[in-house]
Image (cartoon, rainbow, N blue to C red):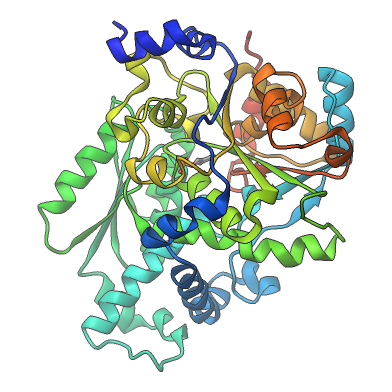
Length: 450
Ligand SMILES: *Cc1c(COP(=O)(O)O)cnc(C)c1O
């Protein structure tokens, strides 16, 4: 693949982009990171606190319905939430086996175990489907705002939704989230799957009555085709991972709910107790929404890094080049298939790269092979299984004190050794709950050179 001229200029001017083009692990530090209050106003123009509060309120309204249909959500009162766990044994394992020096506490936000869809997509994806269902039902007089939303489980509602189609393009997990929830409500569902998508995810969807359309191309192509086909059908709604605001909002509510989880653990977040978060990133939607929510709640006291596979640093390139969705990893000569199926996006979301351009601290890249090693370490040390894509987050705490770029970032932001000793580092686990046993077996036995 020929390298585009803008990419060549970046490669020639900064060794980080040389590493990117060479598909080597590295970190990019955001040159346009800004203190939060400097951009708060502009951000609110796009998505404000009221939007996030409205999203939370809508999810609460649907909680009785969710609890009724998915008993595994009963403990959280019908809210789709995940635990925040300290992983001290994993911290020790990373220090012993990887020689990492990890300051502060290490926690795992277990969106890998979110009910219903078993991945971070259960936040944004399910929210968008519920909102769409509500919009249709209100518009057609099937419900009123005053109704108890348990009504969505009624047979006539299912028949009503059966007249409509929901479509989505996906590398796998978004398809599972949209597919499971939409089919459950009664919608016809079509999921357009990219080449990187895992077979078991396609089979699981088909078993739920979802039509799965397979593409030999990457994720961007699956989205493009899905969008085109959906737009041709007036009864069809397309969940657009590259531009959707409801999806983004569904992810953003995670932060507010984390406040009480942190309090319950006696964890403070302030200038002297920084929080550093690492989130695996594909097209940018999930990590972008989570990051945005975190910044709104914790401001400059939270530092958010994304992590992408060396084969798909699409958000990194979209931000660093200021070309946003008008960039592609192939512009840097990068091509190939990744084992990190959930992160395999060649071109980033234009919406998320723009809104998060001044918010993210940086972006690490990680080799596929390392994901399986982290996965086995987490299993052995904590008896927790999360899917390989999810394990990308662990490179963050391992490399924070190692790379020149991150060391400079810590220095620039006065994250002294003393403050770091009080830090809370959080790896965001993004998927795993629905992985079938025989697939875990395969994952556990996969060893790749890197
Ligand atoms: C989708 C996904 C992500 C990243 O979300 P994007 O919105 O694509 O950036 C991370 N991990 C897993 C397991 C995913 O499925």
